[in-house]
Length: 334
Image (cartoon, rainbow, N blue to C red; front, side, top):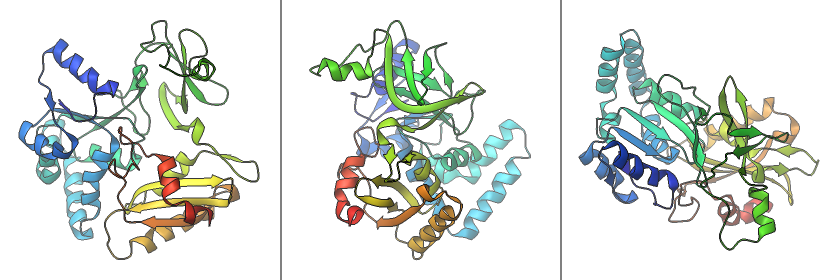
């Protein structure tokens, strides 16, 4: 395995613990040397945030249409073969992508932020399955997709029996007699009680639901937008729809307060001609089928990459909505 995120992230530390317990090798590197490390160390399992996989996928999405058609034909041919030769053919057809990750990967584990369904499907189609998991720094992994029991779009099945509760408002609570985290240092007790209302119970702040035993995350409770009309909107659902356009790298939807309509900040992939027009047409098509309160009234485009260096991504590679809002505040409330 390979670890490249800060060790303040509990999932990265679990990689240390499991490598010691099970006796496999663990490569450490800094994020800026990740691709060099992947190619030289050739790991069999890679655990990372969606950004890594979306970055590699973006190069495929920006290929000439005729070349992608040829590759898709190879995918269709591979689907007719038994498992072993199918994997071998996919590895040859998509050798460039396999080689970026060292050419020896069995599967990926992805978490820390929501994954695009299109990205999950893409990697599954090229013989590099992404198994999405969900958890928190305070409690570690709580659900995961695993080989033989996986469903694209979900964050998997619970790791522990009866450890998750869904409240009436959709918030997910963790119930466990031995929570690894019992509170926060130097935080007002009244505020801490919002997360740890009683012993053995923790509010995650994530909203979700179960379907056939698999957990689906619909967004963050604190991110809910309350429109001027009093309608509550979960921006993650709209952002996921916008990001199905291949030219969109990041989409962040804002609304409420001083904004009479929803507005979206769009970070584009590359600078190819026609990208902005294609995205505008896509959002217009979404608006035609959306209820009035969920229509996007304005798009704000940027070619600036969201990164940890400009603080638009936090250390776990999640979008920092406050930083993005302040960066584009004049256009959002103007």
